[in-house]
Length: 309
Image 1 (cartoon, rainbow, N blue to C red):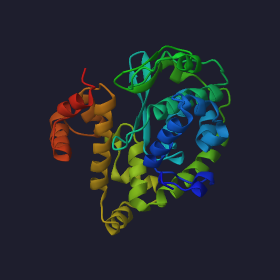
Image 2: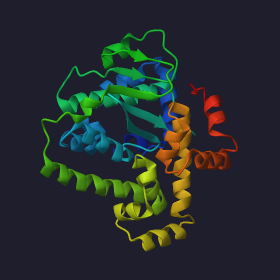
Image 3: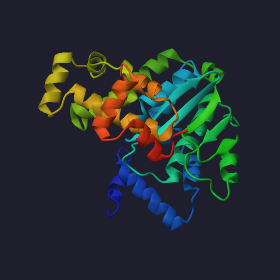
Image 4: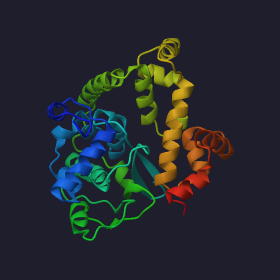
């Protein structure tokens, strides 16, 4: 309990452990076991049953692009605080990962997440030796990188601006052998019910945050679309949020700030690209909002985070 979670919670299959507790547990495990590669080892021991309905649903999607979209949408079923999305740049696609910037995560957490992603894709495609073009981590290079190269099967680079898996854009067009639209629709209904249940644990505001975090880019999100996803009318959404002491614009602002911090800390996307992703009409509008949120400029924040250039 000293780490913020009880033994009973850890043993219950439906328990949701807060991200900060996960960070504390992982750091403690590394200290006790003395294995800095515990994230890679844990990913190897994680199978489809552990990942849950999101991986099963992804397996029955028609293409890898739809499979990755599925993983992104239902990531909240695995836990809170981890976010990812695919960025396309020419002939390459970048599956990027970031955690809530307010929580300091051990290096092993990033290694676990990317290893789990690669291993999951291998299971979905049935290609046991499938390898990305490269894998990037933002933390420093360990003394022995052979476990990383062995698991990923490709060059692994450290000290990079973003945490990501690099693949060819053509790979996202790959058809999946197990594609089954009927089964996918059935599983999607079940997954949506589970997602709604998770979201409702913290009220409508929590559900709205989850919906906003799943939208890539965030600028395409609207209150109408979020209300529809939650099975509410726009008026009902506004009323229930008001009862919880907040509103759609406040929550959108909160998630915008969260994503802005993550993109500035873990990517080299231009301010104009980030502004567009967040739904600002101009880079100047984004910069004004960021100064209001943080008291500093996006450029200074990025420089302090060590990801400028």
